[in-house]
Image (cartoon, rainbow, N blue to C red; front, side, top):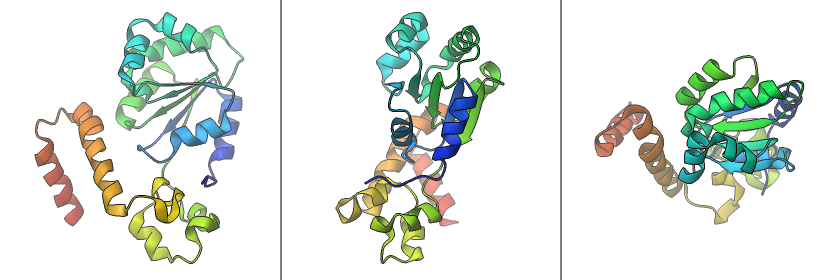
Length: 207
């Protein structure tokens, strides 16, 4: 079930005004889903897939031929050197907007590359989970429920989109934390012991 997002209009307007639009936010907040819905005629490629990231890094011209703009590119922080090729392509197509719609879940890496390579060429839009207003307006998920349930379960769309058939809160967050630890944190901080870092997260949460 699709839950309407308030930010949709802002994303459309940014794509009409900038050659690059960067949607930045945590994993599983619905970045890919909303972009596929807003830009059905764009191509799509995910750099979360190792072979795609490797091709973008080592064979950028061939990669652009395989995935020509306009294109939605997921998790672009995995191919940091590709940003300068996006810049070159955008500069060669002056006057054309909405060429690259990119997403990233590692804000530090993504913002660093955006600032270095695409300053003035990209609109950066933060994107988070469901707001209370979005949750309340989706009658199918909020009907009959109290606000305290929304606050307890959180705003990740996957926790609400399947209704009673979806995963339990505990199981879903367990998988989310594991993915977060194994992918994003390890890449950012070179964490040697994921078990120790998970203990650190639990201590922070307890406080």
